[in-house]
Length: 168
Image 1 (cartoon, rainbow, N blue to C red):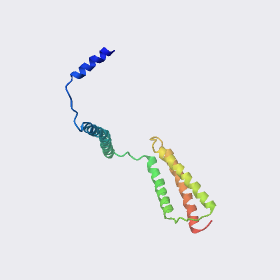
Image 2 (image 1 turned 60 degrees about the horizontal axis):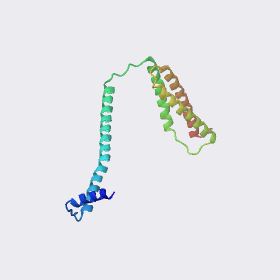
Image 3 (image 1 turned 30 degrees about the vertical axis):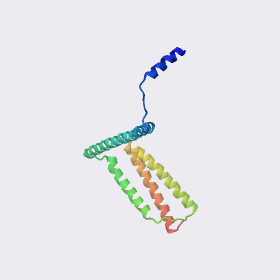
Image 4 (image 1 turned 90 degrees about the horizontal axis):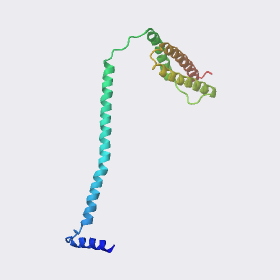
């Protein structure tokens, strides 16, 4: 065991003398910190570059899709679409009337309950209408839902009008 240690001792003694620089450890630590700071800045910079490239690619794709839609010919109106134009015009008229009625802050509980019920039914109907518009072969269902919406809007306008003028 000592023979192996003597061998290493002789080898170490044969090495040339080395004088360490006075600020050797300080310089080594500074170089290490500089290297680590460059590494810590690389990942966020690379991530930002990837996100920027993805955003630019998405923007280009959206613009090209928008151009394709703008260049596409509009579909010819069907009989259902022509019939539903009158229903939608009546709906817009009722919405305008509802928007012009003054809104009271204090009302009877029964009136508030009725308004809340009608508005909830309208919200549910609007949800159903938005789903039906995604179905290409269901224009007759959409027309029925629009008619139902016009009826609900008419009821809502009547209740709000009665509340606005003070008749119960």
